[in-house]
Image 1 (tube, rainbow, N blue to C red):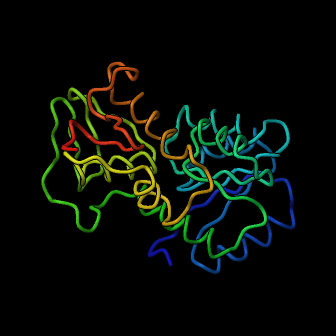
Image 2: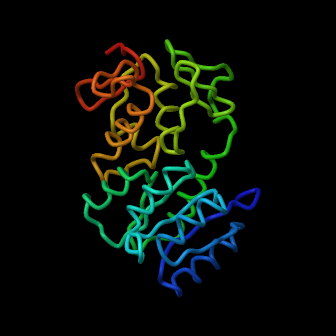
Length: 235
């Protein structure tokens, strides 16, 4: 259970569903706020700055995908996309819009709680267990483990929680090629193979933020067998 009140924004127009979820989350120590449509969700995200957001795809006025895009223009807070649409394409659209994770309705509440805890803990500053105390440097890229901050050529790089988690795994394995399924299991959950493009989408997101030319990457490199490394890898 969270040590402090993590604030969760739920954007959904099903009032009974929101009431039930609010009751459960409050019992687990979360502070909950709600928005009944996409426009309200954007305004709440901007003015109330929640720690984690849950966006339903089918919300009025502005759908969840566009709501996510608009929030990402000013916020890096973790976003979980909630959808009754289990098609891989719908999930990919949500991830490409800037979401960190997704859940398909109906979902197990314990799964939701685990995702919320993982994302909120990664969004907060604080060193990851097992991470070295020193900074990691690779040419112009600098990663501060304790503060969970990243710089490129002395300029801060804004990363979402999932992007930080992925970069962390690559940093910890610097000099080695890491298989895609290992990254997916480490960043999200072991054995999760519901979307094959999960890792490639986030690799692309990382490259857009830390590479001068994402099409010719110098930091996040691809290798045969669906593997990735941070910097040249010993294969």
